[in-house]
Length: 130
Image 1 (cartoon, rainbow, N blue to C red):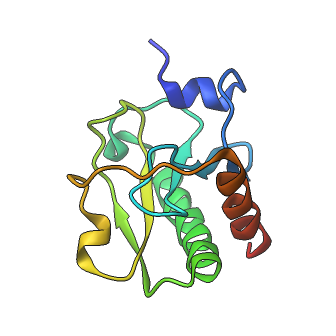
Image 2: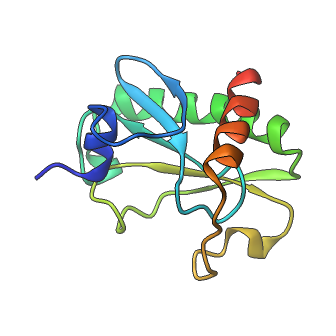
């Protein structure tokens, strides 16, 4: 069964894309913890991140590092927190979350809502830093 991420990869569901190549896609989380909360996913649908081929997994982290740098510059946060949970969508993904304090990365807190204009603006700002 296809995941929502596979549908995003295929263009069936729109996304605020940050970076894309033949193997990976990075886009804004539509239910973010913070403004600029970004996901990095492989285009191959694999449920558990540690089931990915070693080279694909390594390259995914290298892309995440690059995107995290752009997120940090675009959001002017202290750090970019990283999380791999993998229970909410059965498709391997890395969360990159702009943080200024510990609670900014608390997944139990209510998710934030931003207008499509705000989402596009932050995506544009992040892409400009790549």
